[in-house]
Image (cartoon, rainbow, N blue to C red; front, side, top):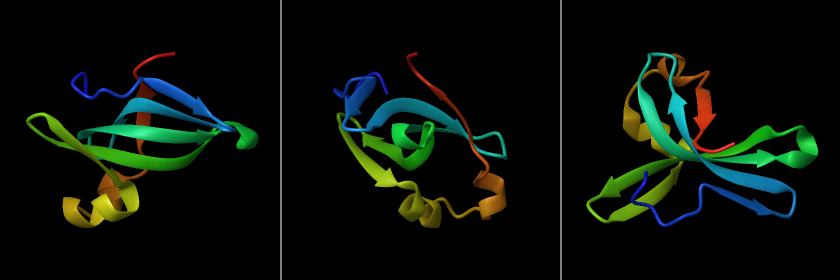
Length: 86
């Protein structure tokens, strides 16, 4: 995650996007970006898993990524998360 050029936290309009680490229910960790809706008490508005190869990274929405992880959804959610700053 340190290799990505994105800021750790970015604020835009009424949302905050932050680098985070998701811990799935089965204890596996996933690097990600989370979007929090500040108009809704900081509720999670979106989760994007970080997929990288050498120096190139892609953000895959959780709803799409979960199909490729090939685990039952109850192994993944509920996630626990920790942002990398703040």
